[in-house]
Length: 186
Ligand code: SIN
Ligand code: FE2
View (tube, rainbow, N blue to C red):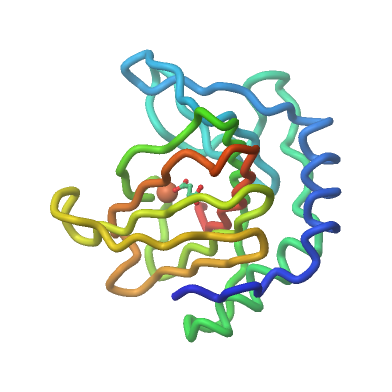
């Protein structure tokens, strides 16, 4: 479900991203096969999504420095909870927020979010910065996807039967795009 303009406090959210990335810098993670991802990433919360030769997983400490990930700001948790309620998925208490930073040349290929333990919980995905087009493939990675143009402040929520749907993101429209992905991972 697209909640257009649901994140009204984008300035506050952007400031929080600055704080988090000062403590846990954006970095190019590598796929298990060794290819650097084009978007840079960091996380906040009780764990952070991570990828290297050992696979996709959640780490409780940032492997870059051995420290806990920055705490999830209360503004983040409240936004994710509110979006889940508004989309009809009920109360949602994410334990992690993956922050993706897309430079103008960065994109994300089709994948599904499948490294979490609890698939009963939805995914809440927030766009900040430059617009980009999100592609929803659904149950299979092929066919022609539904295209959703995401503007800053837009929140996309998926869950239930769609929780493991395939999705991708095109290059942002000429500037830097930030995406916050809230998940219950542990
Ligand atoms: C992701 O699927 O992890 C990123 C989604 C997005 O950038 O909108
Ligand atoms: Fe994803």
